[in-house]
Length: 115
Image (cartoon, rainbow, N blue to C red):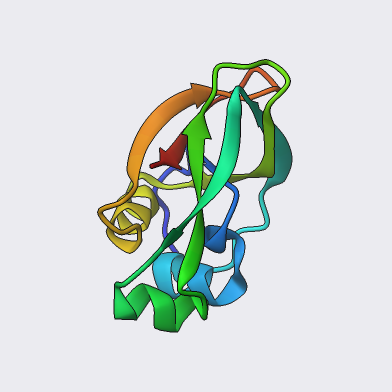
């Protein structure tokens, strides 16, 4: 168990919600809370990183695309992480993704991975 502050919010909409991925990436299960990200839609990309494919069980992963349209929304979960856990999430995500700061429908600021 870590005594580092869990003060990093990460909006997840794909494999980072899976128990196996969380246990491998964070060393614990993170339930999170439901939230929505406006102005984005989900697309899908082929993943060729064998470690990520083996861990997630999927070779095609969702990826966010900004639309700017208020009618577009992505439903997901907000995870409360430590800075070290956020770094671990960065290592899990393949080069197709980059982490950016966004404002969720709940008005909370969170990190999210986009393509």
